[in-house]
Image 1 (cartoon, rainbow, N blue to C red):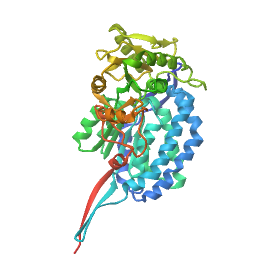
Image 2 (cartoon, rainbow, N blue to C red; image 1 turned 90 degrees about the horizontal axis):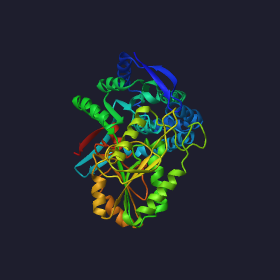
Image 3 (cartoon, helix red, strand yellow; image 1 turned 60 degrees about the horizontal axis):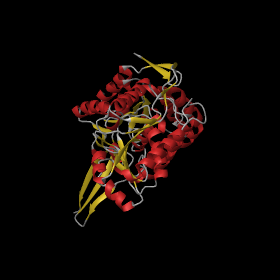
Length: 459
């Protein structure tokens, strides 16, 4: 059994150590999840009544969760609190909508026959989540799985294991409300622990992570003919048209590209700006970047904390250096700050093109690279010139034109005058290497179900 060593990314000091879950322990938890039917036997309304208790528990534990996230992965306190708040809202919306999503659906009804779709829970679901949003992402997947009646085994990222333990404690605190211990279990560890979980007899796997990790999960799960859903990386494009409100657009794009130190799969990673407004837009992005305060995540006024892990900082620096070597210019930021901690100043880059890593590979850092265009068809082609397709955005004063362009973009979610994540009830997932399957919506919730067709012949 190995050790998980958690490093505070702001100080580079050891935050804590934990034991990894043993192979036998993982297999025992999967066996428990597969054999126990208690949770699945409850009605969806009973499950909603119990799970809704998490909203108050999250509210009560918000400060502690935000503090642990700040110390373990460098998320500023106000960002950590915000993550808890949007998680509470997501749980509330799930509890409201999911009963309707999995209620029996009448497909056809005539004098001679009736056809019904019935949605029954997949027995056991392995959820593997990343370090960048250690509260929202796991809850956004675990909660619909539980409300559908599945038993969940969760592996948080090894870089946010202490946040994971705090979340696990919230589920323990649900037990007085009737939540069975067998419905939710946690395992701790790194890649090998995740592999062991995927290779087990678990019935379904949901991974949020890198393309490489997704390929490994898909290979194993596909080989066993078990269900899997993958939400993977992004290289999300924003197209700024000549009639956009560039002050608002610059503010929102810089906010998106620097959120959580840029460690967001749905953050803006590349910008294509019309030549007519290019100079003014670039200047506004520089001004917006100047407003952001980088520093100790425990400080109340910090906007950007350190990278969660050292290798991520090194990857971003590599992309920046590659772009500079190939002719790009940093107008502001993009430099490591201090000798201790994984801090970087938010940057704006220009003179970029698709020969540079920063315009093709997922960067995951607080950098806004901006490329000029004149022909919208060329901008669309550039936006689609990627192996990723998670999110994108169009910024324009002409909403009909924006929608027309959005229909040509190869991405799972395309915003017009906004950039970011889908809301509950709308499908979330990617094109191409950004993932397989959907979550959040009716289609996503039903991923956690075996769909049975009942065909009744009358007389």
